[in-house]
Amino acid sequence: MTQVHEYNVVIPEAARLASLMGVKADLERVLAYAERMFERWSGPHLAKSPFDIVGFSTEVDFDEWEALSTAAAVAYGRCFMSGVRQELPEDDVKLGTTEIIATHEFLMAYRNKHVAHSVNPFEQNTVTVQIADTFATASEIESVTPSHTRQTGLAFDELPRVRDLANWWLARVSADISGETIRIRDILRKMSLDEIKAAGGPPLRQIDQKRDVRTRRRTL
Image (tube, rainbow, N blue to C red; front, side):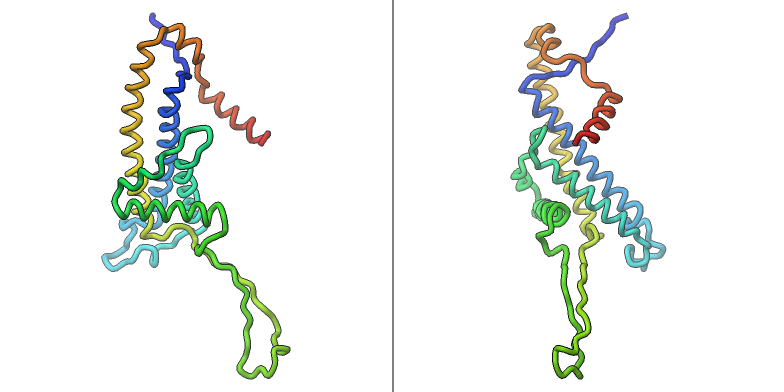
């Protein structure tokens, strides 16, 4: 029986294809988070009558809503950040519609200025004081009240646009993956089998990857 062995393709030309797979995985996570939010709390299928306004009459777990909103924003933002993989060229979003561009700008601002940093209009931290009309002097003030308010996740009407944005990028990335796969195959066909084997070596198995993640968590 013929045995087929798998080897890592470790050549510079393959870096983009490998990176695209990581980006694709993040975009798929954005869609998964959006679909979870849509199915549980914001989809029109949840309306109990033709006059029902979903979101006002549907009980929403806002802690989970915010967590999924944050996860979606982080996964999306990863696609445009450099690291162990090549990032997507962010300027490519200009090839999309006006709504695609606007949604991208909003989601990146939400990620960069609210999720990752507190430099935004998405939250307000204030201190107030109550002064009665009968007060003669400020010495009659008894206390001040600090308060915090913030946007608890994405708005309901933003969710469909985020889903459309992720699908727009995913279509482009999937097309790029198909083209890159053929390009790398053709490059390998011009190499010797010994070169391919020597450069790569066998890939990590899934269980090894999980063990590696647990090891890195303890050492970070």
